[in-house]
Image 1: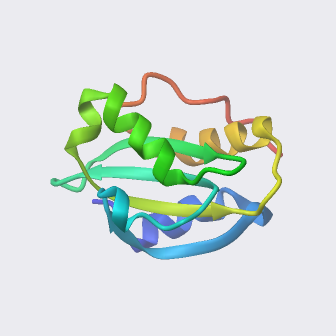
Image 2: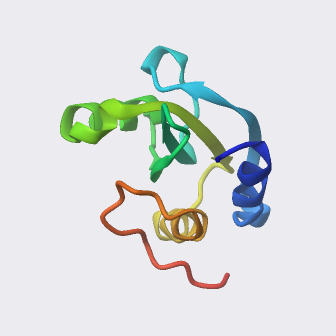
Image 3: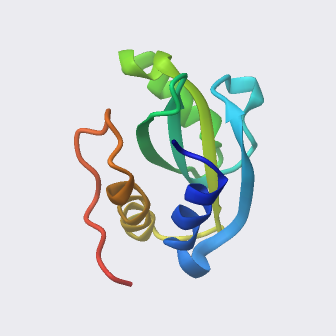
Length: 122
């Protein structure tokens, strides 16, 4: 079962790139999402199963826009009931954010990810 302790372990995998930890989940409703631009997010379903790990790396957009894309293009995204957010410091290169997504996601074994980025040692 995913909880705050597992969230903290996941956030620790991001290391010095964490801007702010959000020690709570958010309902998977766009209006409830925090207004962050760069982050790793962990999506759970109603049974508290980790369904998806992704990242948002937007210039002027926020993670809400990324989740809106998922709702339009992924049938399984409608099953997500809560989102945990690891906010990243601003200005990180896209390749580094992909690596961090892999470092967080691979150990969590999300059921809906087709693949996750390689999790190289930083």
